[in-house]
Image (cartoon, rainbow, N blue to C red; front, top):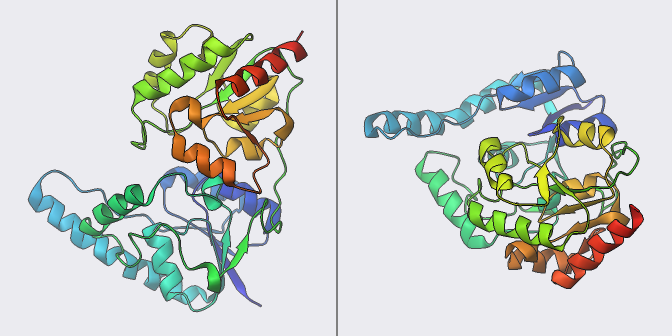
Length: 319
């Protein structure tokens, strides 16, 4: 019988595994914050791999960490070799550990959807190239570091919207209230746009909306900065706890859902009342790729008039 292992990186990946591969033999994870999720969903099957180290500013210490990072990948291979894994499920294709595993693993590899970025390249090759170059200098696995995508030809690709061979249950939505939920993304944290640009986009949304807006921060957003940003914008407030998407929409009702760019709009399965608005935040590339993605189930606002029409419709429905 084939031994199956998976390498989830976040709660969404755990949900995919529970829904599609509940019998997975080994669940590999890199970050300690995933331990509870893995153990809760797959008791006794988690294997903690740790991860590369960030470089300190001290040059002598940085050289030691670079050496540690270079040894990390062989340590992972040695750790996994006795398990006899014949089938490996990956969710990310451009990260160093996943690239190393894809290069050295001799069994069957499946690449599962990891969210919106599985389908489209939301940032340009320069952003990925600079990131990959920095990783190489830090001692991370070098092969393929500059490339955004892996060679998928030797993998079984599974996803919801293009191959239609992966499933995921949508979270339960509370009865619709009057407010519209704006779902945050770590645009400032990832260096894609400055925080001021995010604030400008939210201010445009608030000015266009006849109904109250609530902002649900992304888990990687700085909560203090998000709250300070919203305090200066009238017509939009921080969404109440809990902030986890599934629990939040299950406890708080919303008329519609908006995001500059977010996998959450795919996960909610409320496509008839969801809208991507990257252009409102000055994200022209993201607007273009989302608009051209043929399998995209969520509308993409072309201009401010589209946003105003969507919000007006939500306002009428809430009366």
